[in-house]
Image 1 (cartoon, rainbow, N blue to C red):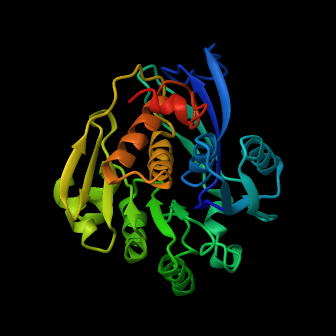
Image 2 (cartoon, rainbow, N blue to C red):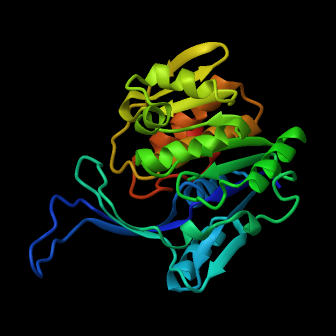
Length: 304
């Protein structure tokens, strides 16, 4: 297998454009409503598959209709979902996202079964068999913050597996806990708020450098419309965002991760792989939902 995505799986229900929630029983007619596979593992898995990668996704979902829908969507896009475990006592995680006209995205969210994911869900040898393992949402998958799981990551890396990591929330208490994973990660891809919260710094460059010192080969901080910042042993570089008409920013971080990983899989150096991530994020920003406008790798690279 090429890539294992491990972590948060969410069903997103999105509507646009939404300027306000109507009072009482009021109705607002919108242009579009969409259902997508989302979250730092599931959203990245779908984007990776669309970019031509073989992907196995591992996580915890409910034994419910939302879980069935999530499995169907991911399978249709070519993701191997045999790593998903079903929980009878917890619902599948889901979010309702009313997308503002400017692309902003407030959220109504149920954490659900994601909180129950533990090391026992990961089959022996799975991580070591992958070219890349992407940890999606280690700030909320508390059960993976486990010495046994860290041993699995260390063993996989010793055999040549690359480990990447992204976060889900912007909650400082949760983000700080995810710092325990950094010694077992090659590439860390937080957004600006997450990086500064984890590092305890109000300066993104200092934050990236501090996080780099925790073990990763590189820290790639996404900065929204300002592009991204890449910190490595060679120094700190900034990559600009690509100019596109933004419809919705949901899933742009997941797409950035998918594009970056795809670049690594194609033998690209750090900065060029980050450019692939930038192009994937710009592609997704032009439509509604975490996999919007993604068709194939050629379509993404055409933006560069």
